[in-house]
Each structure stands twice: as C-alpha cells, then as structure tokens.
Length: 174
Image 1 (cartoon, rainbow, N blue to C red):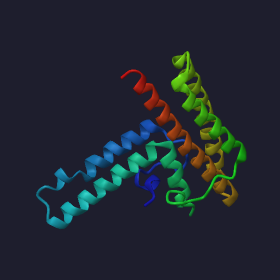
Image 2: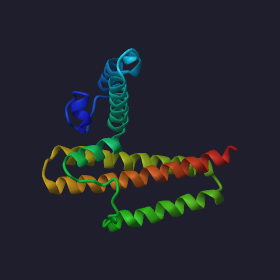
Image 3: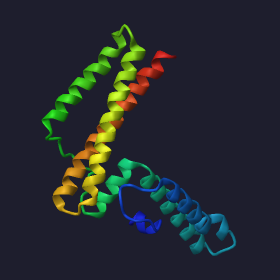
Image 4: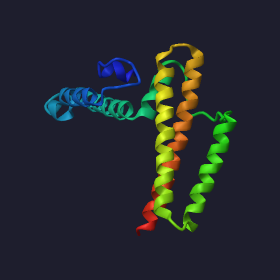
C-alpha cells in the first residue's frame, strides 16, 4: 500500500502536515464504518479495512521516521525487520558518549542544566539527521536509499535516547 497515493499527496519526505490532516479527515468521513451501518456484511468489513488503512497511513505519514521507512520500503529497502549493524564508527563512539552522559546524570550536581544540555544536543543532531534524510530521499539512486536507511537507523537510536532522557527527567520529579 502506497500511503502517499491513498492520501493523494506528493511522495516526498517534506510533507505538509496540515494538508495531510485535512486529507485524513476527508478519507475518514468517506470510509467510516458508521456510514455503512445499513450495508451488507461485506461492505461493513470493507469499510473497517479501509478505515484501518487510512489510520495506519496517517500514523505513518505524520511521523518523520515512519514516513522515511515507508518511502524506503516503496523503493524496496525494508529496514523495519532488519538486523543490520551500524558501520559508522563516529556515530558508534557518539552513542557511547551519550549513554555515558545519561548514566552520569543521576550523580550530577546540576541535573536540570545537564538534562537541558543533552536535550539541546539531541535536538540539534536529530535535526541534522532529518535534513540529511530529506536530501537523500529526493535522490532516487540506490546509494542514496542506503544512506537514507542509515539516517533512519540513527534517528531510531536518537528516539530511544530521548525516551531514556525523558524517563530520567520524569523520575526526578516523582
């Protein structure tokens, strides 16, 4: 299923989120199961299936990581269920540094400042990855798709780091 076609929007990484939300509401109205309450069983099941497709498509396209994965999948690159290891040694070293910084937060003298500094660093790096990804997904060459896949892997790692930082922050205020 090509969600860009379903939502009738251009297949590109930089999506107009407002346009996507409008298309979502329109599609939901058109396929909502309540609209088929008096229809036959097959029509009701089809409406439920279409509603699920629309919901999944919206969740996929509104999230940059899932959108990039979908675009890569449309190009034949499936990174959702892979076990490829990261080959970027610089990023691997940075991962270790960030993990160490997260572990040291618990013993910090100024935990609020340290959390703010890490959040700023994570945000800046994430934006850099998204900018790179946007450029790589415009290029239709296979090598660009592989580079984009690496960016997605890094973004997934950054999301996990951000979640961990949020848990530490939440634990501070409990």
